[in-house]
Every structure is written in structure tokens, then in C-alpha cells.
Image (tube, rainbow over all chains, first blue to last red; front, top):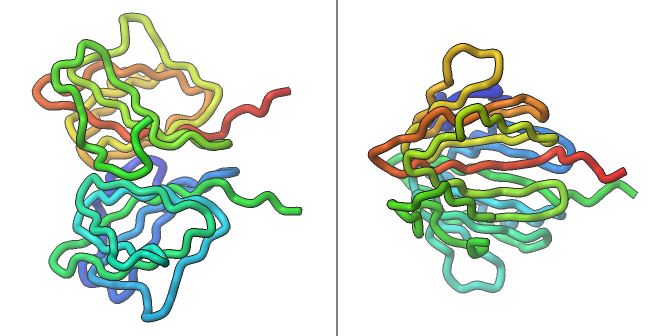
Length: 114
Length: 114
């Protein structure tokens, strides 16, 4: 987890092999994380399928986010935000190859345990 | 409320008299809003005192956030984030006079109704 205060653009590994997930807030009902991508994409055929909602805000770089059933990815650039409703299958088609793509993701609406 | 998808830097009134609060997500347990400040500060003697937690990320501009009991405001610039725990009294001492200060605020940890 990153510290309770800091700068969201710091401590990003520019040459990371994998996407980097850093937790900023983990509390009941909400989880905030920073995702740093450096050219990665979701593996071929892979879809994220989450039982909770995810609100994302792209802070730097750019990315293509594809929702299942749509023919072309939505291109996200700095400042673009998007709600991914629970159960809406999606994948990251591409992220910027020239600079780190920093996402803020707020996860919420978790299904309560039975 | 802003739309479910958009750009967080758009539709900011540069000459607004008051701070502008725009709701991005309102769901059970979490509320995400954009706050646009154009030089405003909290009124003299006023303290925010919230029964829930607020995580803030400064996206543009700059601001001075004072916690009660601290002698100097914390200066926030682009990319700086900060957790304001429930019950931690605070105020905005100043915001940038030359460009809009855009904050992302995630409110969570609401006290459940009795």
C-alpha cells in the first residue's frame, strides 16, 4: 500500500514488465488503487468480469478499453473517466507505449457475503 | 451530476464566484465528486468536520489544506493525495489564484443510520 499522503505520479517503474497495482485506500465498501501500465494489454481472449463497480480516471498516458459487445475500444486520454458497472465484461486493448499510463481506480458496490 | 463518462477537466467555470461541486458517482457507501476552486478559501473560522472519511487527489492548480492543530497548511500540488479521516477538522486556507484547482474527492465510511 502507498502511504496515506503522497504524489500519485511518483514511484512509477518506467520499465516494469507487468502492470503495477498499488493500493491507496482499503476500507469497508471501497478500495482505491493506482494502476501503472507501461504498454501492457490484457492477454488475448481475457476479459475482466467483476462483481462490483469500478470507476476509473486516466491521469497520464493513454489507453484503449474495450467493452464486450462493442466493436472498437474506447480511447482514454488524460482526464477521461468512465464507470465500469458490475458484470460488464471489459479488457484493456492497449496502453501507451511511450509514457506510463496512470489510472486511478475506485472499486465499490461489493456483493455482501451471504 | 456529470455523465457516467467524460473528462474531468472539462466544463469548469473559470470565473465562478463559488466553488463548484459536481457529483460523479453516488452509490451506497461511496460518493465521488469533482471540486473546482478558483481562488476560494474556507470562510474565516470555518472548519470542515465530517463523520466520514474523505480521500482527495489534486488534479490541477494548487491549494493549502490546514488540519486543526497544525501550524501551517499542507501545500498540495498536481498529483498530491491525502486522506482526511472522519472527525479530523480541516479547512482550505487558499487555492490557486491563477488557474482552476481541480480536486477529486472520494467520500466513504459513512456512519450507518441507527
